[in-house]
Length: 357
Image (cartoon, rainbow, N blue to C red; front, side, top):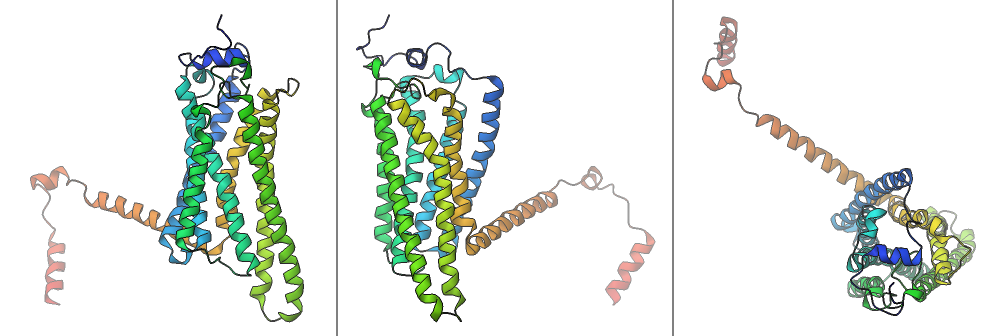
């Protein structure tokens, strides 16, 4: 019988699962595991491919060398990392998770927490950049490349910190009574901190976008009587409003349920049955990384055109590669040995006629 106030760094994760949720109470059903892995794999393939295309589009198209698109590329990079983290999680869960060491579990969860924190922080920074632009009624803000670089570094510094906090000491390895159910070596107090801090960021984003929404409506009502001949000024506020509504809807749908469940687990809610929701809520949160390229990129006609051109270049390069391989095929045995049949008399006559002409 292990002592409750004794540190257990040398134990495998099965020990902590038995302590927090009981023996095999969180065991995967084979069909459930297969379904989650299939859906998750398809989602991750799309996340990796689409976000790689967004990053490539921003790099190759000089029209995207503005603060918003630099931040967009950083969001794509964080979502790309989320895809990698979720693939790693899918194949280190179920029975495999019970065989993980403490350091292995910290790495698995830290990678996921870092990527999701980076996605959330990038969404917040993009909201601030959009706020600055809209308040000045400009397409792009006046942020310098240096400031954008500092923002990107700050985003990743905060995200890495959030992902490594449990391994730095905020855990329950030495206090088993404080262990959570969803993360068996994480302290319940840390889950409360994690969920509340993210919910606060969510509220900040809501306030920013509500402010943008009201400002655009007011500005549009003032400009409409004087801009009957200008379609660009009318279209810009409409696009902004649509984007704001889609962003808010996707974020609320994907993130809020998981954050609430984490908060309930941190509060040690015994009647909430948090274990029955954890896998699906995690998958729902990761699906936000699927939606981000669509919302922030494919609604932009220039971005979509650039991505299509990149896909054509990839397709043409593949075809050229196949063609070069076909042309480089070895000669047939007849050609190699010089035993091919001599040309017919008709062919000789045609060749002579061509030479004369």
